Image (cartoon, rainbow, N blue to C red):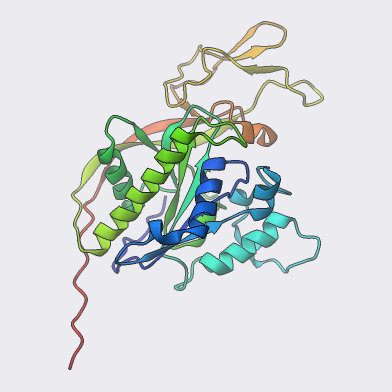
Length: 319
């Protein structure tokens, strides 16, 4: 995994995006609220811009119109010549790349926080490409320390040699905030309130960093995605079984060889045949059915995060 450079200057251009998936209602409703009343997102050292990422899918209360927007921010899509028949999300990805990027350019936004809900029992988690994103790891630490009674976990989602494709990848740095369980197209007050508080705390962390606060080194755990596991299927591709009751809702818990993972419609159990313990996440996520994923297998890592040094004071202008 490659490292992201630690910011050496204050972060001035920050965006908070919701509705990347149009039926994940906490982010949708927060983005819509902040577009009407953006003052809540402002801090003394920077202004955060709210963005409704997928307005067409939001209006239809669908995850997406033509293809998953959060898998569309790749060079293949962003650099191809535009065509009238392009999928809606491809066109929208190019618009967002111009608004928040362009990707890998000096003019890109400094940080993007992308808001998501999951139907899986994931609680609060942050999705980051790499464990070597020192700034993102310190932001995670800040959020966790504010609410130690509520676990906040980190998922390292990007597979080796794969492009991210996520919305926040157009910026110089960023992450996704994922809260669940919440049904698609439904707004829950508890998760809405928690997401709002977490966004405020993330912006406060950026303000502290911009003010010159130093953050010490620490040890942490994270879950690195290994592979997806599909449901049992018939020869025609239809479901032949579903997630086993002993696995359902047990995201981040250890799955050991021989444990049941699926229950066939014919009655028998399917057991996990892997050689080592893994940690399933996004178990029975509604948005992953069309991707052929019943859950993602992850491995749990423990690693050291170096200190985040304070910014050098800006030079005083000459007379």
